[in-house]
Length: 396
Image (cartoon, rainbow, N blue to C red; front, side):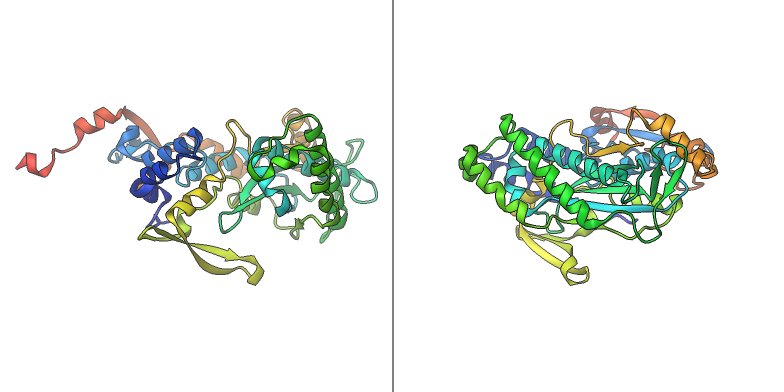
């Protein structure tokens, strides 16, 4: 993919410090840290390295280091490729499904004040819902395995917490002696998933309140009173919660490309940015209410960066998690059993080839022969400055 004409880093470099000065009354250090990491990403300020092709010996000029911040749009491409390469050998020879669990908009203000606890509850209750309904013999009657990815944004960058779950279309029988396939165009009943998810999340929210785990600030201060909180929760029981099930899609070969759309996304990609001028940022968004029509939205610089910073995750928070027979403590024995019951060797030739060429997955490929690149020298910011040509005025 070609480099976009405008990047989030360009906006932050041009106007980020002014934004920080104007908004210090609400910014935290974690916000400033992300902005400054993005500003310095792939610049001499972070140092660099010299790369050489292991096949033909071609050398490229100094490559500046990346910031590796997980909120940086530029850094997530390499992280995504490494993650997908590691998952290749875990993909089963069967169809896969994509299921999305979304929290109601009524909960959004509370989520923004309690990100860690409520994002954890979203992961836990959505996973428990899938596992419980799939285990029910009236539905699939099997132990399933899947991974979930947290997204916190809408196309307009507003807060919209939801998890994407990618699930093999089937599971292990209760006695682990056979693989139970789901029907071709059916996996689990959506209405049942909605009701179970709603019940589990609201119950978990009540428990978190009783345990004093929730914090209330600003307009939500009154919710700290038990009766007020209970009354505020009541309408959640009367509305349908959104659980979206896509039709089963292709097998493991297609899943690898499909995963890249969801696993390491940030709130907005550089390729969606259109322009930045006169303190206004314009970007593309997809209107799902009108057949995914592409539209443009223009926001002030301060509002654009405010929305971008809404989606910074709590420190140490894990946004890709595995459940069922893919859970870390079960994966090794149960995944091998799944391959055996599906009549397939665990590691395909494609995965073996990928593993054999992963000498330096973060560095990419040689622009001349396509061979793997390796680092032959690392340079600090000071060393890069010493190697830089003198300014034109000095040279003259």
